[in-house]
Image (tube, rainbow, N blue to C red; front, side, top):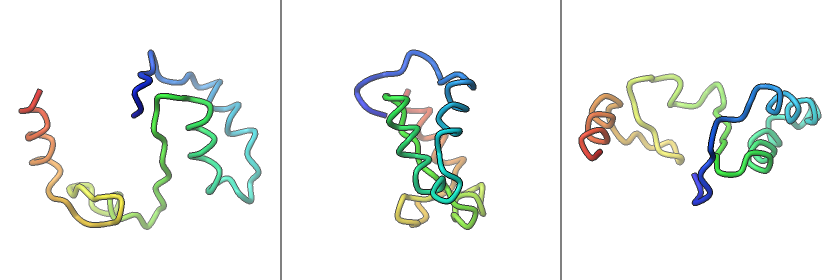
Length: 82
């Protein structure tokens, strides 16, 4: 997320408006940039169906596909820092 902190999550109607503005042929490529533009403060990305993160729900995977470790251990470490 950027320095501009959102006050609340985008409402469904606003998200629907952004989705309706996308062309079906290019929606995969345009989705994250369109959401990022319309909802500053959030960092949207797209996960493809063959994304390793979604294939293994117990792994933490970096943006480059490198496995960083076990999800539970990662969450426990992050919570301990709070």
